[in-house]
Length: 429
Image (cartoon, rainbow, N blue to C red; front, side):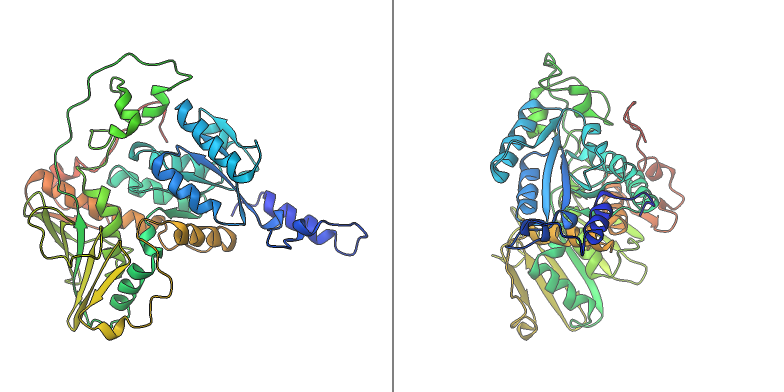
C-alpha cells in the first residue's frame, strides 16, 4: 500500500487515541446494534453503473460495512437512476453524481470503485483507478485484447491495489465445489476441462449515424472513451454496443469465456499460464492444449444441436474430466458428478451463478486484509489471454501456438498483429 496515511488508517488511529478519554461515543460509532464503525467502513464510488452494474451494486448494498457515495456516467439518465436508487437505499440525498470518472477518482474519501461500463472502458478505467489509489471491482471481460490483459495486471501490481474481476462464479458454491474436486484430485489426474461459450461471429456493421445529443445529456466522446471514433447512434447507449468493433472484445468469445474459460483455468490450476496451442474446429467448437497435456474444450452453452451438456444445470456450464471421473456445474444451482458421493452434504449455501453477493464479500474482505481476491488481476491476465488467443485462432481459420511467458504467438506475425490495441486520445495510459 501507499505510505500515505489513508482515511481508514487515520480513523482507526483516532479511535485508538480516544481510549481512556471521558468522551461519550455513540454506540453506532463503535459498531454496536448491527452497525459498522466508520473506521471499518469501505467507501465506494461507481463508474458506469448500468443494468448489470445495478445488480452488482445491490450486492454491495447488502454489506453493512460499505457506503456507496458517488457515481460517474456520461449519460445523465443513468447517473440519475443510480442516485435515486442509492438515496432510497440509505434514506438520504447524499449520493453525488458526476459526468466524468475523474470526479470519483479524485475524491480522497473514496476507497474503492466498481467499474461496470461496457467492455471498451473496463481496463482503461481500472488502470486510472489504480493510479488514483483505489481498489477495484471490475465487470468482465476486463480487457479488449491481449495487450490490455498485460497492462491491467501490471498496473494493479505496480500500484498495489486489490482487484476483483466480476467473474462471480468463482464464489458461487456449486462452481467452487466442482473446481475443488478437480484441484484436490478427487477426479483423478485432470484430462479435460470444458467451457460453455457463445457462437463466434464477425463484428456487426456500424449503426446509422444520428445527430449527437447535448453533451450534458449524453457525452458521446466520454462514452466512447478509448474506443475508435464512430458516429453516434442512441442504440449504442441503450445496450446495442455488443459485437461492434472497438466497443466489444474479440468476436463474442470473451463474453462467455470470461465466465467459463476462467473457471476451466481455475480447475486446471492454470491461473498463471495459458494453453500453448489453440485451434477452432468451427464457429461453435474450439479446443486448446496446456503444456502439461490437459485439453481445454470450448463448445456452445446452449442452442440447436447442443446435446452433450447435462440438461437442467443452467447457463454457463463447465465440465471437468479426470482419469477417475467427472463433474459438471451450471448457473441454476446445478451440479452433477460421476461420483455422487463426492457431492453429498457439500452445498450448504446455494445461490445462482449470476448472483455477485458472495464475490462482492470476498472483494471487501480482501480490501481490508490486502490479500488477493479469488479472481485477481493475474488470474484475469491469463484467463482472458486464453479467450483472445482462441478467438484469434478462429479469426485466422487455423491453429496457432502461443507462448504464455512471452505472451505472444510463436513465429506468427499475422496473429501477433491482433494482440494489440491503440487507445483513442486523450483516453490513453
